[in-house]
Image (cartoon, rainbow, N blue to C red; front, side, top):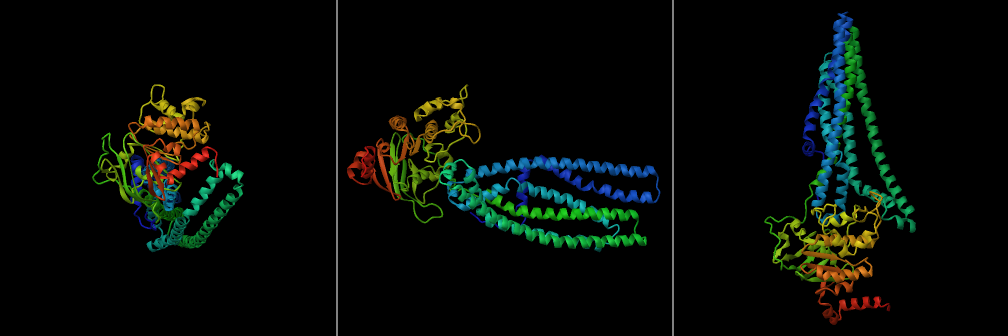
Length: 603
């Protein structure tokens, strides 16, 4: 991953405008027209004030004065109407852009491989992108539109002021606002650098808030008395961040006070010069009134221009974090000349001399691992915690590519197969399976969400998958059966036990029904009756499938045609249950230990 740069160039402005254009091109065109009109129309009443005052001083016809007043009133009303229209257009653009960028972040997150989830810096990048993406692209375009409007208006104001002041004086008056712009740009750069440096600390505060307010940890926090400790950590972290932010704010305020003093002194010097000209007769009363209003308006516009330029600069700095995230690419890349998954029903999955080391670490998790599984076979993978079983499962699913060695199907290296095509051939039960807070039916149907429902809204096979997983009985007891919503986060849904969630995950795996099945600890958390029924029915279900069974339990491994024993990232034994027992090695020791435990014999 690349480290975000200072972001001090304009390289992100064009992509930001493109994002806005892609999200709502028509709104952007209309907004541009409205902005130009907003810039021009306010100049009309300002100039007409001079003509009205001079006409009154010269005792012109009342009808002429009233006509000027009427034109100024119409221009003012149109200006107010455009202001309301611009506010609506900004809000419409902001909503469209926020949805568009959020969709881009979702698509990018799903495109990235699991390797990124092993990197803390990825979560820093994601956090910054999620914080900035909803507002920064819209802010860039809003700033550009604001700068366009302000620049046009300011040019008109300068022309009006030039009626009564020489150009060098006008230039000096405008230059007096430059220190304020410098102060604000330096403050924005300091804020950006602080944010880059403290992202991990901000994420820590978010994590502590989740611990203290979320459901997953509520029981332990209360029982173990952890709440005061974690609350204290949260308060200390927030206090430290707050002190640093207030220090930056104080530094910015001191600079702005001095810059405003310079700007204000220049304005009042200019007012004094024009007043002296009026006293000498070198300027009319209308000129003086127009100048006072123009200076007031010009000072406000200059402030808006500097604020807009600074906001644009600041947004461009922070926008670099959004485009840093959107610029990430997958590590498990698509092949240049993709191959198809062999359709041969007898194709065998081969793992040959595979080694793997997680990114950012030096210690290999897998070394020289080889195994195979063919159609109609159930192959078990057993071993202690940390032996590398789940990592091998991730490699077979192509969430990672091996550091060395190869995985192939009927001689076709899986690296040559687009991962989405390979995924379409697999069903898998993960040990950390998902819990979807939707209906029971959807929790199963998500295994194959392209299937059409029957007239009653239930997808074919959902009931059958639930029966096979041992979930049907408790589902029938729920208030609305398969339509019962689950969890209390989104709705007042039903709460399930861990074993019931496991059965739904199993049902989802069975409903997917693919030629390759990987089951990681399928019997853990299940009651003995469900476990026995699952193991009994697994062989018939696997008749036309290649099944890899990852388990600690010898009772589950015994049904396998072939068992591989992993220890320290290596395959140390393989064979049938009887063959491995006769070896009197690791597997035999595991078998004896579990057998003794089941018989209640502890030594």
